[in-house]
Image (cartoon, rainbow, N blue to C red):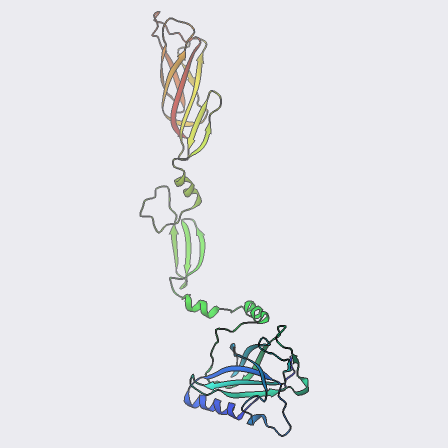
Length: 336
């Protein structure tokens, strides 16, 4: 990059400032240009109205306020359209007053022998140029953006690392002082607690097992969700061996098994494999090895959690014959 001398406002540039203040129209910085012109000792920068030999230019990309009436005028100039390499000796900033104003050379500087060489556009060479002006606090400054502007990696990195990047845009998009804006969300023993932009708080209650279709403004936790989705889903089962069961998500359970009588007791009590509050049970005999007739049983719930069997004689000898008889049972209930 050329080592430029201090940039000096031209007479036309000073007049633009005065015109902007008087007319209350904005001062619009339009472009920055580079050239290879040389100044003679007799030439005055204040009297210049154009670069002596312009070679490259681009529109102004940004105006950054430094405070206290100072601004940075920023532009990126590349050699993409340069057909012949040149020494970037002169630099000019152009501006106008109002949208319909005439563009004029606002300020100028020349690096002379300390100019750097800019090659032709066969290989990309771009320069991020930032120029600081003091214009006071009475001037409204603007730029007209070109849709074809691009940004250098250095400028993008600087923007991305800025803590206030896009802050104004977010503040305009979201009214962060409104009670419609959620500032924070935290867990609450009844649901979720939302802190709003105006610092008011609201609790969104959990949906419980006793939900209904009107619970549209409530939040669902994982435990309840699993229960609601699994009302008819099987969550445990056993099908191997003589005993088995099927347990559903709502704790409804079906259990079954076999009981064999190798003697003739008055009754027999069995406990199902899964502890449950039994609702009902049924049984039937599969076969018998002694006796000349069938043997039936009474079956019932004993102490809520067990099944009791009591023989009833139906054979020709009018005696209960359980010796060797196999009974299949099935029970339903609520797992505990």
